[in-house]
Image (cartoon, rainbow, N blue to C red; front, side, top):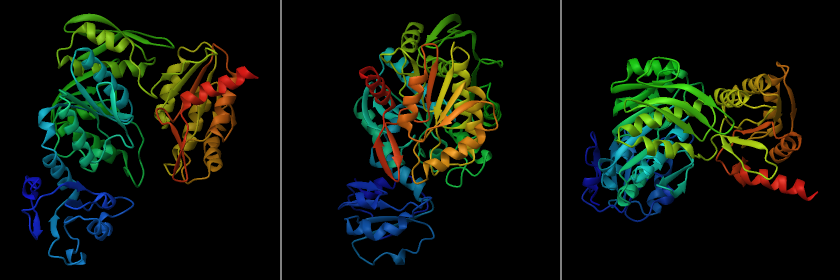
Length: 491
Protein backbone atom coordinates (compact mmCIF):
# COMPACT_ATOMS: atom_id res chain seq x y z
CA UNK A 1 0.00 0.00 0.00
CA UNK A 2 1.19 3.51 -0.77
CA UNK A 3 2.55 5.26 2.31
CA UNK A 4 0.40 8.34 1.66
CA UNK A 5 -2.73 6.19 1.95
CA UNK A 6 -1.48 4.59 5.15
CA UNK A 7 -0.97 8.04 6.68
CA UNK A 8 -4.47 9.26 5.79
CA UNK A 9 -6.19 11.05 8.68
CA UNK A 10 -3.05 11.54 10.76
CA UNK A 11 -2.48 15.18 11.63
CA UNK A 12 0.72 17.00 12.51
CA UNK A 13 3.05 14.79 10.46
CA UNK A 14 6.49 16.11 9.59
CA UNK A 15 8.21 14.07 6.88
CA UNK A 16 11.79 13.80 5.72
CA UNK A 17 12.17 11.70 2.58
CA UNK A 18 9.88 10.08 0.03
CA UNK A 19 6.27 9.38 1.09
CA UNK A 20 5.19 8.03 -2.33
CA UNK A 21 6.53 4.55 -1.71
CA UNK A 22 4.99 1.10 -1.29
CA UNK A 23 4.76 -0.35 2.20
CA UNK A 24 4.40 -4.11 2.65
CA UNK A 25 4.19 -4.25 6.44
CA UNK A 26 3.79 -2.07 9.52
CA UNK A 27 5.28 -3.06 12.86
CA UNK A 28 6.45 -1.69 16.20
CA UNK A 29 8.75 -4.67 16.79
CA UNK A 30 12.17 -4.15 15.23
CA UNK A 31 12.72 -7.92 15.07
CA UNK A 32 9.67 -8.26 12.79
CA UNK A 33 10.80 -5.51 10.40
CA UNK A 34 11.49 -6.69 6.86
CA UNK A 35 12.24 -5.07 3.52
CA UNK A 36 9.56 -2.49 2.76
CA UNK A 37 8.40 -2.09 6.37
CA UNK A 38 7.15 0.94 8.26
CA UNK A 39 8.64 0.74 11.76
CA UNK A 40 6.79 2.72 14.43
CA UNK A 41 8.79 3.60 17.56
CA UNK A 42 6.63 3.31 20.69
CA UNK A 43 7.85 4.48 24.09
CA UNK A 44 6.74 1.79 26.55
CA UNK A 45 6.94 1.30 30.31
CA UNK A 46 10.02 -0.90 30.20
CA UNK A 47 11.60 -0.22 26.80
CA UNK A 48 11.63 2.62 24.30
CA UNK A 49 11.15 1.63 20.67
CA UNK A 50 13.34 4.53 19.60
CA UNK A 51 16.32 2.54 20.91
CA UNK A 52 15.68 -0.13 18.27
CA UNK A 53 15.43 2.07 15.17
CA UNK A 54 18.83 1.01 13.85
CA UNK A 55 17.89 -2.66 14.33
CA UNK A 56 14.69 -2.10 12.34
CA UNK A 57 16.67 -0.44 9.53
CA UNK A 58 19.18 -3.31 9.50
CA UNK A 59 16.24 -5.73 9.13
CA UNK A 60 14.92 -3.85 6.10
CA UNK A 61 12.58 -1.10 7.36
CA UNK A 62 12.75 1.86 4.99
CA UNK A 63 10.25 4.11 6.80
CA UNK A 64 10.66 5.09 10.46
CA UNK A 65 7.95 6.83 12.47
CA UNK A 66 9.14 8.65 15.60
CA UNK A 67 7.59 10.57 18.47
CA UNK A 68 7.68 14.36 18.32
CA UNK A 69 10.68 15.57 20.32
CA UNK A 70 12.97 12.69 19.40
CA UNK A 71 16.09 13.95 17.60
CA UNK A 72 15.80 12.40 14.14
CA UNK A 73 19.48 13.23 13.55
CA UNK A 74 20.28 10.25 15.78
CA UNK A 75 19.01 8.04 12.97
CA UNK A 76 21.77 7.06 10.55
CA UNK A 77 21.56 9.43 7.60
CA UNK A 78 20.44 7.45 4.59
CA UNK A 79 18.62 8.88 1.57
CA UNK A 80 16.68 5.63 1.25
CA UNK A 81 15.12 6.02 4.71
CA UNK A 82 11.96 8.09 5.13
CA UNK A 83 11.50 9.62 8.58
CA UNK A 84 8.06 10.58 9.89
CA UNK A 85 7.61 12.60 13.08
CA UNK A 86 4.16 12.62 14.70
CA UNK A 87 2.73 14.11 17.92
CA UNK A 88 1.78 10.65 19.30
CA UNK A 89 3.10 7.42 17.79
CA UNK A 90 0.47 5.28 19.59
CA UNK A 91 -2.40 7.21 18.01
CA UNK A 92 -0.63 7.30 14.65
CA UNK A 93 -0.01 3.55 14.83
CA UNK A 94 -3.71 2.83 15.34
CA UNK A 95 -4.71 5.03 12.40
CA UNK A 96 -1.97 3.54 10.19
CA UNK A 97 -3.17 0.04 11.10
CA UNK A 98 -6.79 0.86 10.29
CA UNK A 99 -5.80 2.23 6.89
CA UNK A 100 -3.32 -0.55 6.12
CA UNK A 101 -5.91 -3.27 6.78
CA UNK A 102 -8.64 -1.50 4.83
CA UNK A 103 -10.62 0.07 7.70
CA UNK A 104 -12.26 -3.24 8.68
CA UNK A 105 -14.00 -1.67 11.68
CA UNK A 106 -16.37 0.16 9.31
CA UNK A 107 -17.74 -3.15 8.03
CA UNK A 108 -18.53 -4.68 11.40
CA UNK A 109 -20.93 -4.06 14.25
CA UNK A 110 -18.62 -3.52 17.23
CA UNK A 111 -19.49 -4.43 20.82
CA UNK A 112 -17.00 -3.43 23.55
CA UNK A 113 -17.15 -4.75 27.12
CA UNK A 114 -15.10 -3.14 29.90
CA UNK A 115 -14.91 -3.55 33.67
CA UNK A 116 -12.72 -5.18 36.31
CA UNK A 117 -14.62 -8.47 36.36
CA UNK A 118 -17.01 -10.17 34.00
CA UNK A 119 -15.57 -9.07 30.65
CA UNK A 120 -14.64 -12.53 29.46
CA UNK A 121 -17.84 -14.26 30.51
CA UNK A 122 -20.05 -11.48 29.15
CA UNK A 123 -18.34 -11.47 25.75
CA UNK A 124 -18.61 -15.27 25.50
CA UNK A 125 -22.32 -15.07 26.38
CA UNK A 126 -22.91 -12.43 23.71
CA UNK A 127 -21.06 -14.51 21.12
CA UNK A 128 -22.99 -17.67 21.97
CA UNK A 129 -26.40 -15.96 21.81
CA UNK A 130 -25.66 -14.24 18.50
CA UNK A 131 -24.32 -17.49 17.06
CA UNK A 132 -27.48 -19.27 18.15
CA UNK A 133 -29.37 -16.59 16.19
CA UNK A 134 -27.35 -17.58 13.12
CA UNK A 135 -24.94 -14.66 13.01
CA UNK A 136 -21.24 -15.01 12.33
CA UNK A 137 -19.35 -13.48 15.24
CA UNK A 138 -15.76 -12.61 16.01
CA UNK A 139 -14.49 -12.43 19.58
CA UNK A 140 -11.30 -10.80 20.88
CA UNK A 141 -10.43 -11.19 24.55
CA UNK A 142 -8.34 -12.46 27.42
CA UNK A 143 -8.63 -16.18 26.66
CA UNK A 144 -8.31 -16.19 22.86
CA UNK A 145 -9.66 -14.76 19.63
CA UNK A 146 -12.42 -16.65 17.81
CA UNK A 147 -14.54 -16.60 14.70
CA UNK A 148 -17.67 -18.42 15.85
CA UNK A 149 -16.28 -21.60 17.48
CA UNK A 150 -13.00 -21.61 15.55
CA UNK A 151 -10.12 -20.42 17.69
CA UNK A 152 -7.84 -18.08 15.73
CA UNK A 153 -5.16 -17.82 18.41
CA UNK A 154 -4.57 -17.75 22.15
CA UNK A 155 -4.18 -14.30 23.69
CA UNK A 156 -1.28 -12.87 25.64
CA UNK A 157 -3.21 -9.77 26.70
CA UNK A 158 -6.87 -8.80 27.01
CA UNK A 159 -6.84 -6.31 24.13
CA UNK A 160 -4.03 -6.67 21.55
CA UNK A 161 -1.88 -3.80 20.28
CA UNK A 162 -3.54 -1.72 17.58
CA UNK A 163 -1.70 -3.30 14.64
CA UNK A 164 -2.71 -6.82 15.59
CA UNK A 165 -6.19 -5.68 16.61
CA UNK A 166 -6.95 -4.25 13.18
CA UNK A 167 -5.40 -7.32 11.56
CA UNK A 168 -7.82 -9.52 13.53
CA UNK A 169 -10.76 -7.33 12.55
CA UNK A 170 -9.75 -7.63 8.88
CA UNK A 171 -9.62 -11.40 9.29
CA UNK A 172 -13.17 -11.28 10.67
CA UNK A 173 -14.37 -9.16 7.75
CA UNK A 174 -12.72 -11.57 5.30
CA UNK A 175 -14.58 -14.43 7.02
CA UNK A 176 -17.89 -12.53 6.62
CA UNK A 177 -18.46 -11.81 10.30
CA UNK A 178 -21.31 -9.43 11.05
CA UNK A 179 -20.31 -8.61 14.62
CA UNK A 180 -17.04 -8.33 16.55
CA UNK A 181 -17.30 -8.58 20.35
CA UNK A 182 -14.28 -7.31 22.28
CA UNK A 183 -13.01 -7.16 25.81
CA UNK A 184 -11.72 -3.60 26.12
CA UNK A 185 -9.16 -3.27 28.91
CA UNK A 186 -8.38 -0.05 30.76
CA UNK A 187 -4.80 -0.24 29.47
CA UNK A 188 -5.98 -0.48 25.87
CA UNK A 189 -8.06 2.66 26.37
CA UNK A 190 -5.32 4.52 28.21
CA UNK A 191 -2.64 3.57 25.69
CA UNK A 192 -4.79 4.16 22.58
CA UNK A 193 -4.75 0.55 21.38
CA UNK A 194 -8.40 0.89 20.34
CA UNK A 195 -8.00 4.41 18.95
CA UNK A 196 -10.05 4.92 15.80
CA UNK A 197 -12.73 2.38 16.74
CA UNK A 198 -16.32 3.48 17.19
CA UNK A 199 -18.45 0.96 19.08
CA UNK A 200 -22.10 0.42 18.31
CA UNK A 201 -22.63 -0.88 21.85
CA UNK A 202 -20.55 -0.57 25.03
CA UNK A 203 -20.93 -2.44 28.34
CA UNK A 204 -19.71 -1.50 31.81
CA UNK A 205 -19.70 -4.47 34.19
CA UNK A 206 -18.13 -3.11 37.42
CA UNK A 207 -14.98 -1.55 38.83
CA UNK A 208 -12.94 -2.61 41.86
CA UNK A 209 -9.39 -2.07 43.02
CA UNK A 210 -7.07 -3.87 40.64
CA UNK A 211 -4.28 -2.97 38.22
CA UNK A 212 -3.12 -0.18 40.54
CA UNK A 213 0.64 0.10 40.10
CA UNK A 214 3.30 2.31 38.58
CA UNK A 215 3.16 0.33 35.33
CA UNK A 216 -0.63 0.33 35.01
CA UNK A 217 -2.77 2.88 36.87
CA UNK A 218 -1.38 5.09 39.64
CA UNK A 219 -4.82 5.54 41.23
CA UNK A 220 -8.45 4.41 41.09
CA UNK A 221 -9.29 7.76 39.52
CA UNK A 222 -6.92 7.04 36.63
CA UNK A 223 -8.30 3.48 36.36
CA UNK A 224 -11.89 4.74 36.20
CA UNK A 225 -11.14 7.57 33.78
CA UNK A 226 -9.44 5.10 31.47
CA UNK A 227 -12.54 2.88 31.47
CA UNK A 228 -14.77 5.90 30.91
CA UNK A 229 -13.08 6.60 27.56
CA UNK A 230 -14.99 3.71 26.01
CA UNK A 231 -18.24 5.61 26.49
CA UNK A 232 -16.92 8.56 24.50
CA UNK A 233 -16.78 6.36 21.41
CA UNK A 234 -19.97 4.29 21.43
CA UNK A 235 -23.61 4.91 20.50
CA UNK A 236 -25.29 3.24 23.46
CA UNK A 237 -23.98 1.68 26.67
CA UNK A 238 -25.45 -0.84 29.08
CA UNK A 239 -24.23 -0.08 32.60
CA UNK A 240 -24.44 -2.09 35.83
CA UNK A 241 -26.49 0.23 38.04
CA UNK A 242 -25.67 -1.77 41.20
CA UNK A 243 -21.99 -0.87 40.94
CA UNK A 244 -20.75 2.31 42.64
CA UNK A 245 -18.60 3.24 39.65
CA UNK A 246 -21.45 2.23 37.35
CA UNK A 247 -23.41 5.11 38.86
CA UNK A 248 -20.51 7.43 37.97
CA UNK A 249 -20.55 6.16 34.39
CA UNK A 250 -24.28 6.84 34.19
CA UNK A 251 -23.69 10.48 35.13
CA UNK A 252 -20.46 11.11 33.23
CA UNK A 253 -20.69 9.10 29.99
CA UNK A 254 -21.31 10.99 26.75
CA UNK A 255 -23.32 8.26 24.99
CA UNK A 256 -26.89 7.05 25.47
CA UNK A 257 -27.14 5.00 28.68
CA UNK A 258 -29.33 2.01 29.54
CA UNK A 259 -28.99 0.19 32.85
CA UNK A 260 -29.18 -3.36 34.17
CA UNK A 261 -29.05 -4.68 37.72
CA UNK A 262 -30.53 -6.67 40.56
CA UNK A 263 -30.84 -4.33 43.55
CA UNK A 264 -31.27 -0.83 42.10
CA UNK A 265 -33.97 0.44 39.78
CA UNK A 266 -32.83 -0.42 36.25
CA UNK A 267 -34.08 -0.58 32.69
CA UNK A 268 -33.34 -4.32 32.78
CA UNK A 269 -33.65 -6.07 36.14
CA UNK A 270 -33.31 -9.68 37.37
CA UNK A 271 -35.79 -11.01 39.93
CA UNK A 272 -36.60 -14.30 41.69
CA UNK A 273 -32.99 -15.48 41.56
CA UNK A 274 -32.03 -19.08 42.34
CA UNK A 275 -28.40 -20.21 42.53
CA UNK A 276 -27.16 -23.81 42.83
CA UNK A 277 -23.72 -25.38 42.54
CA UNK A 278 -24.19 -25.87 38.78
CA UNK A 279 -26.42 -23.05 37.48
CA UNK A 280 -28.09 -19.69 38.09
CA UNK A 281 -31.76 -19.05 37.43
CA UNK A 282 -33.67 -15.76 37.29
CA UNK A 283 -36.63 -13.91 35.84
CA UNK A 284 -36.23 -10.96 33.46
CA UNK A 285 -38.56 -8.96 31.27
CA UNK A 286 -37.52 -9.47 27.64
CA UNK A 287 -39.44 -7.74 24.84
CA UNK A 288 -42.04 -6.76 27.44
CA UNK A 289 -42.72 -10.27 28.74
CA UNK A 290 -41.38 -11.96 31.89
CA UNK A 291 -39.08 -14.84 30.96
CA UNK A 292 -37.28 -17.44 33.08
CA UNK A 293 -33.56 -17.61 32.21
CA UNK A 294 -31.27 -20.44 33.29
CA UNK A 295 -27.50 -19.91 33.02
CA UNK A 296 -25.06 -22.82 33.10
CA UNK A 297 -22.62 -20.95 35.38
CA UNK A 298 -23.38 -20.67 39.11
CA UNK A 299 -23.15 -17.41 41.05
CA UNK A 300 -24.80 -14.03 41.43
CA UNK A 301 -22.14 -12.50 39.18
CA UNK A 302 -23.33 -14.81 36.40
CA UNK A 303 -26.74 -13.17 36.64
CA UNK A 304 -25.13 -9.76 36.07
CA UNK A 305 -23.13 -11.06 33.12
CA UNK A 306 -26.18 -12.70 31.58
CA UNK A 307 -28.24 -9.52 32.04
CA UNK A 308 -25.58 -7.52 30.18
CA UNK A 309 -25.41 -10.07 27.37
CA UNK A 310 -29.18 -10.18 26.98
CA UNK A 311 -29.33 -6.37 26.83
CA UNK A 312 -26.77 -6.31 24.04
CA UNK A 313 -28.36 -9.12 22.07
CA UNK A 314 -31.81 -7.57 22.13
CA UNK A 315 -30.28 -4.80 20.00
CA UNK A 316 -29.76 -7.52 17.37
CA UNK A 317 -33.37 -8.72 17.65
CA UNK A 318 -32.46 -12.21 18.83
CA UNK A 319 -35.32 -14.47 19.84
CA UNK A 320 -36.05 -15.37 23.45
CA UNK A 321 -35.68 -19.03 22.53
CA UNK A 322 -32.14 -18.47 21.24
CA UNK A 323 -31.21 -16.50 24.36
CA UNK A 324 -32.39 -19.34 26.59
CA UNK A 325 -30.75 -22.09 24.54
CA UNK A 326 -27.40 -20.30 24.38
CA UNK A 327 -27.20 -19.50 28.10
CA UNK A 328 -28.35 -22.79 29.59
CA UNK A 329 -25.25 -24.64 28.37
CA UNK A 330 -22.76 -21.75 28.40
CA UNK A 331 -19.18 -22.67 29.26
CA UNK A 332 -16.35 -20.14 29.54
CA UNK A 333 -12.74 -21.36 29.90
CA UNK A 334 -11.44 -20.65 33.40
CA UNK A 335 -14.48 -18.74 34.60
CA UNK A 336 -16.38 -20.68 37.29
CA UNK A 337 -15.43 -23.72 35.23
CA UNK A 338 -16.37 -27.04 36.81
CA UNK A 339 -13.89 -29.84 36.14
CA UNK A 340 -15.46 -33.27 35.45
CA UNK A 341 -13.61 -35.99 37.35
CA UNK A 342 -13.87 -39.68 38.29
CA UNK A 343 -14.30 -38.96 42.00
CA UNK A 344 -17.34 -36.75 41.29
CA UNK A 345 -15.83 -33.99 43.40
CA UNK A 346 -16.99 -30.43 42.81
CA UNK A 347 -13.82 -28.70 41.61
CA UNK A 348 -14.05 -25.20 40.18
CA UNK A 349 -11.34 -23.36 38.26
CA UNK A 350 -11.65 -19.59 38.31
CA UNK A 351 -9.44 -16.72 37.15
CA UNK A 352 -9.98 -14.78 40.41
CA UNK A 353 -6.62 -13.10 41.06
CA UNK A 354 -7.56 -9.91 42.90
CA UNK A 355 -9.02 -9.36 46.38
CA UNK A 356 -12.47 -8.47 45.09
CA UNK A 357 -12.68 -11.31 42.59
CA UNK A 358 -11.46 -13.88 45.15
CA UNK A 359 -14.01 -12.66 47.67
CA UNK A 360 -16.77 -12.77 45.05
CA UNK A 361 -16.11 -16.35 43.98
CA UNK A 362 -15.68 -17.65 47.56
CA UNK A 363 -18.85 -15.92 48.79
CA UNK A 364 -20.74 -17.18 45.75
CA UNK A 365 -19.85 -20.84 46.28
CA UNK A 366 -20.29 -20.58 50.05
CA UNK A 367 -23.93 -19.69 49.51
CA UNK A 368 -24.78 -23.08 48.00
CA UNK A 369 -22.05 -25.51 49.13
CA UNK A 370 -23.34 -28.06 51.62
CA UNK A 371 -19.89 -29.07 52.88
CA UNK A 372 -16.63 -27.14 53.16
CA UNK A 373 -15.24 -24.55 50.77
CA UNK A 374 -11.57 -25.41 50.19
CA UNK A 375 -9.69 -22.49 48.71
CA UNK A 376 -6.42 -23.03 46.82
CA UNK A 377 -4.76 -19.85 45.62
CA UNK A 378 -1.58 -17.79 45.36
CA UNK A 379 -0.55 -14.37 44.08
CA UNK A 380 1.45 -13.51 40.98
CA UNK A 381 5.02 -12.33 41.28
CA UNK A 382 6.17 -8.93 39.99
CA UNK A 383 2.67 -7.57 40.63
CA UNK A 384 1.06 -5.46 43.37
CA UNK A 385 2.37 -6.97 46.67
CA UNK A 386 -0.16 -4.99 48.69
CA UNK A 387 -3.00 -7.29 47.69
CA UNK A 388 -1.30 -10.44 49.02
CA UNK A 389 -2.21 -10.12 52.74
CA UNK A 390 -5.63 -8.81 51.72
CA UNK A 391 -6.32 -11.98 49.76
CA UNK A 392 -5.05 -14.09 52.65
CA UNK A 393 -7.48 -12.34 55.00
CA UNK A 394 -10.38 -12.85 52.57
CA UNK A 395 -9.77 -16.57 52.12
CA UNK A 396 -9.26 -17.07 55.85
CA UNK A 397 -12.50 -15.27 56.59
CA UNK A 398 -14.72 -16.81 53.87
CA UNK A 399 -13.36 -20.29 53.10
CA UNK A 400 -13.50 -23.22 55.52
CA UNK A 401 -9.98 -24.27 54.66
CA UNK A 402 -7.25 -22.52 52.67
CA UNK A 403 -4.16 -23.87 50.97
CA UNK A 404 -1.80 -21.02 50.10
CA UNK A 405 0.39 -21.84 47.13
CA UNK A 406 2.16 -20.40 44.05
CA UNK A 407 0.63 -18.64 41.05
CA UNK A 408 3.05 -17.39 38.38
CA UNK A 409 5.83 -16.31 40.76
CA UNK A 410 7.73 -14.92 37.77
CA UNK A 411 11.04 -13.50 39.02
CA UNK A 412 10.09 -13.42 42.71
CA UNK A 413 10.79 -16.04 45.38
CA UNK A 414 7.51 -18.04 45.66
CA UNK A 415 8.09 -18.73 49.37
CA UNK A 416 8.31 -15.00 50.04
CA UNK A 417 4.98 -14.43 48.24
CA UNK A 418 3.33 -17.22 50.22
CA UNK A 419 4.57 -15.71 53.51
CA UNK A 420 3.10 -12.31 52.55
CA UNK A 421 -0.27 -13.95 51.91
CA UNK A 422 0.04 -15.80 55.20
CA UNK A 423 0.37 -12.52 57.11
CA UNK A 424 -3.21 -11.73 56.11
CA UNK A 425 -4.72 -15.10 56.91
CA UNK A 426 -3.11 -15.03 60.38
CA UNK A 427 -5.44 -12.14 61.29
CA UNK A 428 -8.41 -14.50 60.91
CA UNK A 429 -9.49 -17.69 62.62
CA UNK A 430 -9.42 -19.52 59.30
CA UNK A 431 -7.80 -22.95 59.03
CA UNK A 432 -4.97 -23.09 56.53
CA UNK A 433 -1.64 -24.50 55.46
CA UNK A 434 1.08 -23.40 53.03
CA UNK A 435 2.19 -25.68 50.19
CA UNK A 436 4.40 -23.72 47.81
CA UNK A 437 4.29 -26.35 45.03
CA UNK A 438 0.92 -25.76 43.30
CA UNK A 439 0.68 -29.36 42.06
CA UNK A 440 1.06 -30.66 45.62
CA UNK A 441 -1.39 -28.04 46.90
CA UNK A 442 -4.06 -29.24 44.48
CA UNK A 443 -3.29 -32.84 45.39
CA UNK A 444 -3.80 -32.06 49.09
CA UNK A 445 -7.14 -30.33 48.40
CA UNK A 446 -8.40 -33.32 46.42
CA UNK A 447 -7.23 -35.82 49.04
CA UNK A 448 -9.11 -34.03 51.84
CA UNK A 449 -12.36 -33.29 49.95
CA UNK A 450 -15.62 -35.22 49.94
CA UNK A 451 -18.60 -34.96 47.59
CA UNK A 452 -20.30 -32.26 49.65
CA UNK A 453 -17.24 -29.99 49.53
CA UNK A 454 -16.28 -27.39 46.94
CA UNK A 455 -12.65 -26.98 45.87
CA UNK A 456 -11.92 -23.58 44.33
CA UNK A 457 -8.66 -23.39 42.35
CA UNK A 458 -8.35 -19.64 42.02
CA UNK A 459 -6.00 -17.45 40.04
CA UNK A 460 -4.99 -19.29 36.89
CA UNK A 461 -8.33 -19.78 35.16
CA UNK A 462 -7.75 -20.37 31.46
CA UNK A 463 -3.94 -20.13 31.74
CA UNK A 464 -2.28 -23.49 30.88
CA UNK A 465 1.09 -22.59 32.40
CA UNK A 466 3.12 -21.49 35.41
CA UNK A 467 5.47 -18.57 34.70
CA UNK A 468 8.80 -18.83 36.54
CA UNK A 469 11.82 -16.65 35.75
CA UNK A 470 10.51 -15.61 32.31
CA UNK A 471 9.76 -19.24 31.34
CA UNK A 472 6.23 -20.62 30.93
CA UNK A 473 5.97 -24.24 32.07
CA UNK A 474 2.91 -26.38 31.13
CA UNK A 475 0.34 -26.34 33.93
CA UNK A 476 -3.25 -26.86 32.80
CA UNK A 477 -5.33 -27.38 35.95
CA UNK A 478 -7.97 -29.39 34.09
CA UNK A 479 -5.27 -31.91 33.18
CA UNK A 480 -3.57 -31.67 36.58
CA UNK A 481 -6.79 -32.46 38.48
CA UNK A 482 -7.52 -35.61 36.51
CA UNK A 483 -3.86 -36.65 36.51
CA UNK A 484 -3.85 -36.48 40.32
CA UNK A 485 -7.11 -38.41 40.63
CA UNK A 486 -5.92 -41.09 38.18
CA UNK A 487 -2.75 -41.44 40.29
CA UNK A 488 -4.82 -41.83 43.47
CA UNK A 489 -6.95 -44.59 41.93
CA UNK A 490 -3.90 -46.62 40.90
CA UNK A 491 -2.55 -46.75 44.44
